[in-house]
View 1 (spheres, one colour):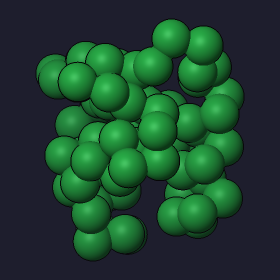
View 2 (tube, one colour):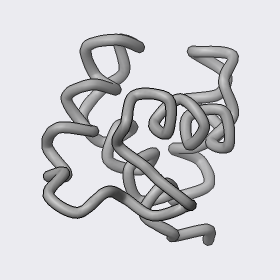
View 3 (cartoon, rainbow, N blue to C red):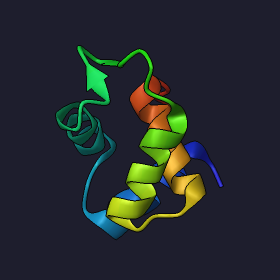
Length: 72
């Protein structure tokens, strides 16, 4: 599955775009000024996504990668 397919599947399942997740991560304190806050571990964000949005590990990892700065 391509990176974009993961993002598309998450949006279809949750109704939230990758940009929406980026904003939510900022509200949670994981992101500040477009960057992941120093000291925040990837597993913290991935587990938040899995638990709060009921998505699988691969899909949560794709959203994490998007938040971290991967866009394609």
